[in-house]
Amino acid sequence: MRKLSGLIFLLPLLELVLLIAMGAAVGFLATVLWILATGVWGAWLMRTAGPNAMARAQRDMARTGRGEVDGLGVAANFLGGLMLLLPGPITDLFGLVLVTPFLRRLAFGAWLAGRLQQVVVERGGKGGGPFDTGPRGGGNVYEGEAEDVTPRESRDQDRIGRDDRRR
Image (cartoon, rainbow, N blue to C red; front, side, top):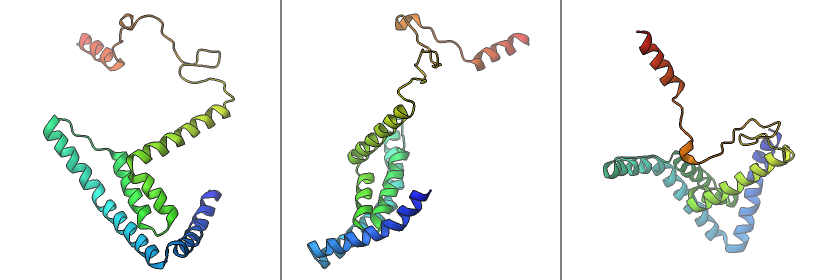
């Protein structure tokens, strides 16, 4: 929580310093145009992310009979639009990553890989996952061919069958 409050305090300060440096490097007018352009783009993304996703899902439903809404993509576009709406190069960079599907997958994959490595390091490389068969693991390992494994009926189906036999 302390890191978050420090970030909330430092982010506007860093944004201001970078905007001043950007103004010195490319000029005042170019910096103002950059801020206005990313703000308009961000507002447009926030306004159109949900309706466009719903229209796309309706078109897919009419064409294929299956319409799905990418909720994570819609949320990322909305949050990215919000980040682009805020003035500053850091929030613009985060917003650009969120609204670009390729960059979003790349960043999420890197974040996920880092989290996975952190979990492995915290456990000391010792298992405990669902497929671990060691003394600490609780997973199941099945040997044999795929056709040898037969699915069991669910507990609900077993219970329904017993209820029907009782009647």
